[in-house]
Image (cartoon, rainbow, N blue to C red; front, side):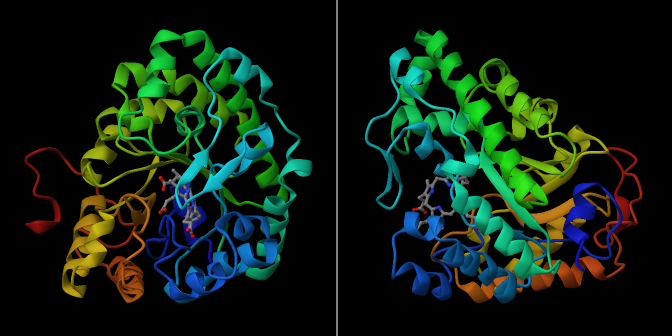
Length: 363
Ligand code: CP3
């Protein structure tokens, strides 16, 4: 039974650094494209047998230390009363703009409205038999609200920001409702067997730190606190390298890092007791094997043996990455982190860095 990932979430010692990839099931895998060619993305999410199959593909192909439920952050928004389409990006034909729109949204009973998600989780736990732990996930309230108000992806997020600044009472009512629904959704995943939860705040980093603190942090904090401490929570806010103290304050056992922040600097800000996940630039996987190995080593060296590091990309794997490069990345993490080499290496051999001038393991 591989508990490396769960141990690292709790900052416990591990034999080698656990690794998984955000969006590890997806279009870069021919095995995924084969399943996907026979149905739409939403059908795939809503058919447990198929969702189980594509969830397991990267576990077998890449040799990662965790599985992540195959679904989408927008799945629980549909039963709130918003018709969802993927073309291939997500589209809500009737975005939320007024207080009446917010009032019409339902907070659904999750067992009735997303039974396929919970059934997928139950089947996965049976199929995995403890081989690797299963991660459940949801979008953070702000990222979900971005899609609900914009209606689709956006470059400038004008509509959600206009609501936030010009109609703060509508924004607050929406965030309140989304947070309530999200707690129910994630608790249902935990009850069904999810062994960790990742909260994706893909768009939290578009805000100034003071606005993040005022308009995002209280809601994410409520959601994370609402989940209790039964399973570890990974809190990933993309683009938040300059406000990690605020991300930490919102909560989570693990803070996800994108590649715009150095892992060593991030750990210094977060302090011991908070694990980190990350943070290879996903485009490095376009490079040659030697570059991938050097970048994996650099990140392991930056962690410098501190307990509580989960290796991952800084955001999702890209659809045109050669699968063998992802396999190579996972192999490099496992091989380089199990060598008791100076600087990188074992997650349980942490020697504290003494300060700026310290050259650490290199001297
Ligand atoms: O990590 C995993 O392997 C689990 C599966 C997963 C998907 N989406 C599958 C997916 C997860 C964790 C997500 C989360 C998600 N979805 C986020 C947060 C993480 C992030 O990437 O920032 C967001 C913002 C979404 C919304 C979403 N779903 C977008 C913007 C898109 C289009 C992206 C694109 O690449 O075209 C999707 C579709 C989607 N979600 C696909 C997959 C595999 C591609 C669908 C297809 O097969 O065509």
